[in-house]
Image (cartoon, rainbow, N blue to C red; front, top):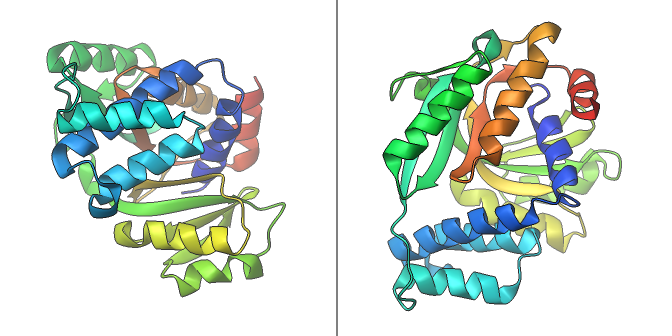
Length: 250
């Protein structure tokens, strides 16, 4: 999706110096806890937990925090919280389809707050299934296009990547959900520094957005990402990378 990985890259670099690191750690801890509760506390036998732990390490989350989050999930910590996963679907400015993945201990509260965020920026919260059909689950690795050539990324293809393409000034490497870990490992062994590696809902169709709607759309996406219960936001916008840069700098 044009510009999407560029926006992800911009957000990734901002988070490296973002004062909201405490909030990020809280979200990562919650994801680890839920993954451990649902699939056990051993990352080697629990792919969802392995991915959650890797994301936490990427964010420089302390080892003790990670271990406590796993303990809460496995019941070894009496203060474990009963969070449940919920997905919200809706439309943003310009008719962009948006999926929001959240972990909450109060579904009614979170639903009300997510609906308010959509409405505030000119969007609307839809019914379950209203936009899910236009997304498919994939692994996505983002690498700095200024530092690496396509030849540098050949190990990803050998490890099972489905596609390697430039999006703005970053490389976007698409994998099947089960191949994400192997592709990431192959690149790291080849000395390639990764900006982000995660499971995403990639759109099968794209919605072009006029320049006059991009600001409101990105404000909505940022507001959703900043919500304490939200783990990930996926959208099918088609926006030029230079427009995203201007919006991010504003």
